[in-house]
Amino acid sequence: MPIRPFAPFVRRLTTVLVVTSAVLGSACRSSSDEGAAQPGEQTERGAGDGAANSAIPKLPRFGDAADRDSGPPLVVERAGGALLLTVNARSGDQINALLPPFIKTTNGRRLDFGGSAVTADSAYFIGAVTARVADSLLPLTGTLHTSYCRAGENLCRSAQRAVQINQ
Image 1 (tube, rainbow, N blue to C red):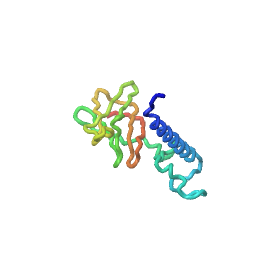
Image 2: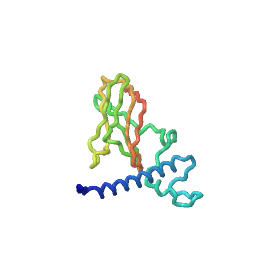
Image 3: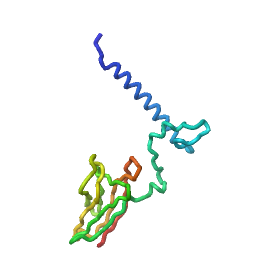
Image 4: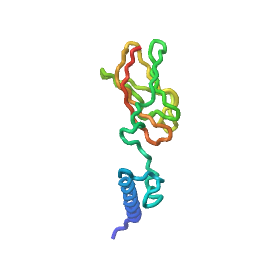
């Protein structure tokens, strides 16, 4: 009989995966029920029922007021012979550096934004996130795509909005 040094490890890993999927499956079923209690709320069955749900971040439902925002504001300023477009994160928000903002124009061009610095993990921009537009490209019409994280959220969201720059 051959020696199988990894058999105990595989058995343990299988057990962990089965238990984890059972807990997460239970959490998903209970959170998808209409009127289900939120983590920490008292239910008919007693307090603490939602303990497994507390580690899962609460996501906005499609159509919630918080889900309808169009992302960080875009500021347009004249700088020399060009326009300087700046995506300004609100206080505490962070712009995703792994998926930088860009404008997809109606004529098929792509205008990419960039920043001068990123966080140590290269995930977010530090400071201004800008793009320079030459006057020869004006007027500019298209869609601004931005990926950003709100303060206190561990999940980035994507936003799109129509832009028209005539200056």
